Length: 283
Image (cartoon, rainbow, N blue to C red; front, top):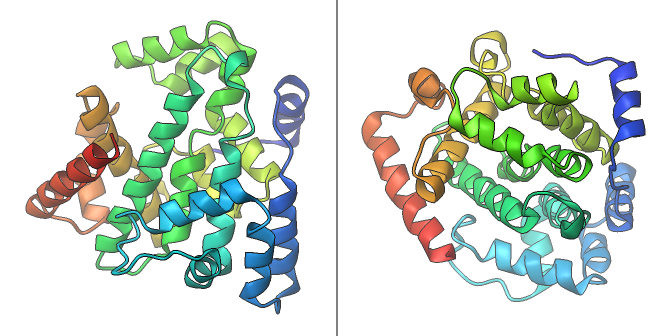
């Protein structure tokens, strides 16, 4: 596992634009911290933000949640989601509002679209697993795993070149290229960002290590390894459909990923077809 020290975090705070945690998240997390607030209180917070309310209804009625009936009322949606679900969705939705596209050297709209697709595919995979795993952290992980990219793209005018370089070579990973060019990388920046928004410690660690494929061998915590495997599979499925190529190192880790998720080749093919249908319906 990759570890970082306080000095690295101080450097990131000094050198990068990291948006502050939104007030709506602070309200929700304060309610959660009481330990006994009724879920109806969450609805009272969410309903004050029309954009968030509309987005939550859209998400909860998407195929990723697989509900048998349409949820039309935000209070019903909040009751269904529970505290963890509401917190996870609000985190992700506010995340996309916090960066100004005009200050970035990459298309942040396209970036967030891809992150949202990966978050939804994470949940689709999670629903298929033989081992029960909470879906909300998978959604948050999908949205936040690359959250260090926008600050990098805002700070460095040539960041797009680094991304193109990573897509065109197998000799260096994007993390290695970033370290060579900028003496830091988006996983570390993302870790700081996630911590500042008080995301769960487990998700922060996965953000920090999401390019570290050695995690498949190093990590002993089964849930953490499963979440990592789901993220890599989702990234690959989305990349295959949107860009026509697998993610870096997929050929090396594919069998390990399938093993961690206890998924055979036929089940993976079925999943691919369902993901293709889902993503094409979003287009």
